[in-house]
Length: 397
Image (cartoon, rainbow, N blue to C red):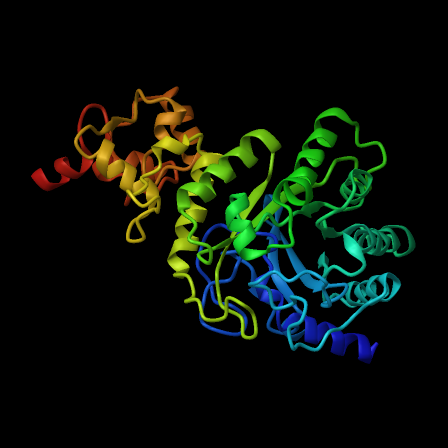
C-alpha cells in the first residue's frame, strides 16, 4: 500500500490541470500556485489528504464528496502540445493495474479518506485498450467492493460505442475532453486527436443512449451524466466560439457541464513559451455558460465585444442589464420568469419565489423582497416595484 500511496502522490502533482465535479464559476487557487483551478470551482484540496489528490468537492445537488482525482497511467502515446503527460516529455511515469487502483481506492474509502473518485488515464496501446482498463477498474469497484459512491470515468479518444455505454452504466458521470471549440483550434492544441470521430462522436453516442435505451444494467437505475472540458487561451480562440459550442452541447447533447481551463504553460511542451491566460476570462466564460444552461438565455444576448471576447471587467449579466434595463426597468409585478432571470441578483429560485409571492399580493418594496429571502443589492436600479424604481424612491427620502 505504501508504494501505491507514493504513486498516487506523484500523480496528484499534476491533477490540478484536469477539471472535475462542482464548479459554480467562482475563482479559487490552484493546489500548487496562485492561479485559477481549471474547473473554476468550489473544489478545494482537502487539507489532510491533498498530497494524494483528494479534494472537497460537491456533486449534483450539492452533495459533498471527498473526491480522489487520479489516473491509471501518466504514460501517454499522444503528444497534446499543452499537456504535462504528453509523449516524449521528460517526466517520471507511473502505472496502476485496474485491480491495484480499485483495491487502493476501496481502502481509502473504507478509512474515510475519500468518498468518490474521478478516474482518468493517459493513452497506451490505443484508446480502446485504455478504456477497457478504466471500465475494468469501475467493474471491480462496483462488483467486488460494492462501492456505491460517486464515480466519474473519462472516455478515451477512440473508445467504441459499447465502451461508452458500459462506462455510463457503471459511473455517475462520464466525460470527453473536447479541448477546443473547433477542428482548427484542436489541431493547434492536439494534432493527433480527431475532433469529430474521436471526441464529439462519443458525446453524441451518450446522448443517443440516454434518449433511446432504458438504463436496465446501470448500477443506480439511471444513465451517467456527461461533461466536457475546453482549454482556454492557447489557440487564439474566442469566447463566442467556446459559448457557441457550449450552447450546442447543452441544447442538443444534454451535457450537464462544460468546463473551462485557463491555459497555463507547462515546461518541456511545445507551448511552454506562450503566456498564461487571464483567470478572469475563465470566470466570465463560466458565468456566461450558466446563463445559457440555466437561465434560458440565447447566445445572441451575451455581450460580446467586436473581437468575440466577453468584457473582463463586468459580469455578462450586468453588462446586458446596463444596456437593456438601466433606462427601461422591469416591473417585477408583471414580468414572466424568463424576463426575471435577466435581472442581476435574480436567480432561478428567486424568480420562482417572486412568481409565487405575486399570487398572494403585489410587491411594493425592497423590504418585501428581503422578507422573501431575496438579496436586493444588485437589482435595485434595474426594476420597478408597483411602478416605482426603488433606488430613486430611496434617494428622494
